[in-house]
Image 1 (cartoon, rainbow, N blue to C red):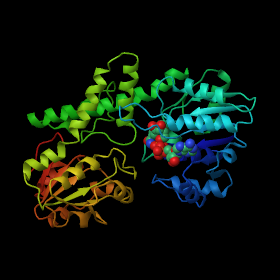
Image 2: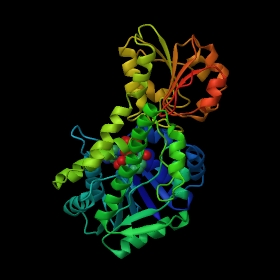
Image 3: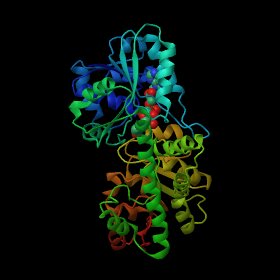
Image 4: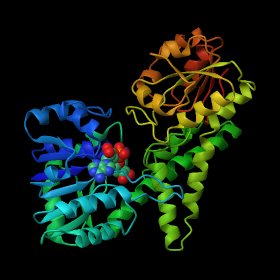
Length: 433
Ligand code: NAD
């Protein structure tokens, strides 16, 4: 199939590259010319394990192309994917301006019957709106049918997820369009679930809201565990053995971040509000998450009430391991507060430092490895559970002024920290000192 993908962010680029890898001819389109020039040379603008290699291979084999010219990109496309951003507006609702612009661009350039696939996460009813915009803006007498195909990849394992996802959801008005999309995706061997468009749109929001609920739930349990002297990891393990509950997404920590859960939970509250329904449970989930982001600073302040001139090591800046994505990362709040309190911040992340420099407070300093960040510090805060952090030689903490580790991701066993005489505060587990 000849496919065009509009938007080459985390979703669009991974989608385009994976589709080319299973044999389709793909043109990726983006308005960011700098990105396009990089990608034409085989350089990925984002960090995602396995992406660069797969990208270079498919460029060389002639199946993967890049352009910033919509007309050129759509020229031979039988199917066009929309994968542009739907960021959060100030009131929490989803900003659909990028998606709507693409709908107009598609209609303007369309010269043949085409299936238009919405990958972007959009509120229920948006695909109908996209269809209307396209129908109203068409220049040629052609038929364009919009299909919903929400994306479930996880940053950090996006390529793996494309080939090993749990399901592909297709929401369509006609069997013909749904079948075309099913055919395109056949080589991935992932189970397909077909439904109507509105249900497909809701599946995406409901899935993210449910996962966010699990996280906020276990974080609430962890706060109670701390007060009672129980160990939340054992609690989560014991809960997770029940197949009805499942053992995933029960890691207590400093809350969820990233480009999806924070915005999608708030958007779903808005979607419900638009039909006069108050989503009380989800409002609680969001509130708990905001509270949880302040947990590490509260623990640090209890131990060091005056942070003026104190050197604080921050390990991990990305919102989760294996990505360079800094959107809604806990590090944004934590480093800003540390600087505001007069602390000197020495931060380290294996891949997100370039992105961090663009958005974190200018006073944050950066180290080139865990060891350099931690050396001579008065406390170490762990914000992202990178393997490099989890597997660090614990002797590194002995190079601190005093070995005080406050871990927002429960990277270490309590016993090993005790054996190494490290004062260790984690989430939902007894303090070791
Ligand atoms: P992103 O912000 O990383 O990328 C969006 C890209 O679209 C940018 O490169 C931008 O330049 C480009 N763009 C904007 N307008 C354009 C236009 N008119 N023509 C061509 N290109 C244009 O976004 P993302 O993280 O890839 O997310 C895309 C969508 O997928 C969002 O709706 C998001 O909610 C959803 N989603 C994201 C993830 C994730 O993990 N990032 C997972 C599932 C779903």
